[in-house]
Image 1 (tube, rainbow, N blue to C red):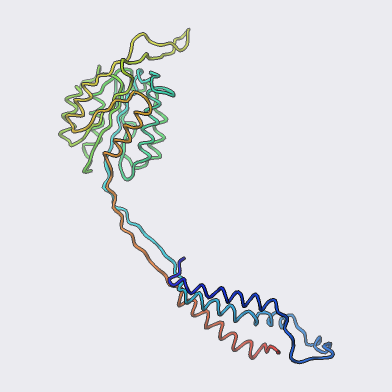
Image 2 (tube, rainbow, N blue to C red; image 1 turned 45 degrees about the vertical axis):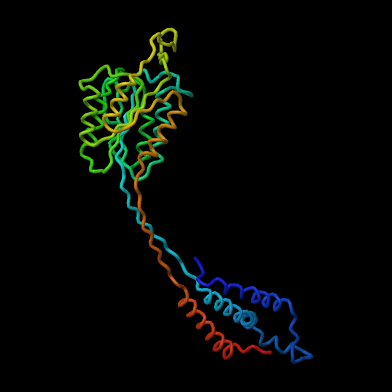
Length: 327
């Protein structure tokens, strides 16, 4: 609700002042009676209330006139959103090496999952999918705009759910299989891993060439501290123990994959740097959103004017014929 001419509302100040003054003063009758008991016989509750109403009806009419002059209007705003979204396939390594605890406060996999969920929640109008891989690769979620469902699926991801190897080439191919039929102007893949390709039928660089031919840009993220980190595992007798072998990250292959597809390679050595990387990707790949706004106004002037006329007629006809107010 807005007022087209709000300055008229200032007239309400003296009007309310008159009403307050009128309610405080004591009216002195112009005709004196020595004995009013005779009026008890004709006294009726309705006349008492109507006398009170007649006093303030004119003030109410004046208030309506002021409000009408201020032109109250209801405003309805409609926005038409036109978005040219990006198709994003997120590819996550879930092999056992992602259990390394050099990314705090938990391990590589948990930090990666939480960071990816935050990235998804900040996007608008994009279709986003998820591929997980180890020695195998499969689609955890096809391209979707339902970010709530996608965010919930991250919670179902656990270590070694796709085997303990690292099939980077097959992971890229699985993501491409979801992106190849996309008609989006921009198609990207975000590949996160902490290892090197050691299984799978497809070489990662050959998979990168296929991505380039399909117009898919690949951002690669290598996680883990320099020199690697020991991988914990559960021993049947001693409980949680750490392997003597350190994880190894093949940065050269990841750089080549990104270079082949006009993407970028990033290195995350802790949780903060991983968050920064996804923020940079978020800024690099912005969705174009256009909006058209339509505003509709409904003017209450005719309605208020009608009620003013009705009340004036009521005051003139009823209170001056049926209920005559004595001075």
